View (cartoon, rainbow, N blue to C red):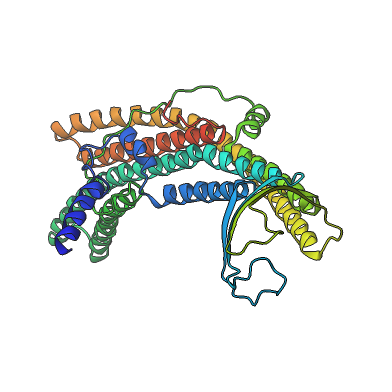
Length: 426
């Protein structure tokens, strides 16, 4: 038995090996590659979504089972003292019966429950791409955060280098009594502050990568090199807010899901109310008896129509609960629409503002590049020593441009997702 168990364990390990060993992350990691990992079946958000679908499927199976066949075997062992006038004087009065029952119709209740379960399962299955889309947006946001942390570190590193050179020059001048103690301390304090900021930026580089690794479901594999994405930052005109909002309200996956759940809830209200309706069952019974009696039937087929005459409080309770569930879903739908109006307005305004900001940053970059060229020329002629400040200004504008472009891309992605479009990298 030990050998058999070891062999079974070995083969089971081979079956689950692909789930335990994943391919290493690409180096460098590209945005599309990261976003394509959003549907990882082992991530908890996908597992939760699949669990909801499985739960809805089980509810459908339960509803369908109410109209399915039921077969039962009945065994009865009995000893009796037969009547003196009985033809069979044996004492064994045992018998066995096979009974098959098939509900034919429950006048609406079973059918409504089945339709409700089907509606909810299909709605949850259709909603899965939206959940994956939300994960794609989260991954893209954190992907951008990692790149920004690298750009911020480069900016702070340039600033620290300039501050250190300035502090060394202040020390030399102080030694020659050209500046006071206060001026020297001011220069040192400025350098220490910038050094501290650079240390924080260095910490954020690792922290942002750890969050991205968790989103990719690779907590033990921090991505090192990320490729700067080529984003669509074209200045496309957005439609008017009212037109855009109407499109979102018609195509939004969250609204569609809750509308389908409302439809299922209405069907469950009907099903709860129809529990009091008549029920029609078909039944076939085959029996074998130990004693021979004239009243024994070897087989029997019958139709049973049950008509309730009194409605108890449990049915009223089921109807009230179903109505309460419908009301909660109705309130949820209204809440989603209110939040969507605010969200769409915020995104619409952000895209317009960020698009204008992109033009301003482009002008600023051109100015700072010209100033860097001028500072480099003056430095080579030993006329001025502000080359370091000009390089810091370039690092700063690169960070701000990337941040603006990333925020613009994220706003567009979110707007597409809210409109039901799961192709986020258009």
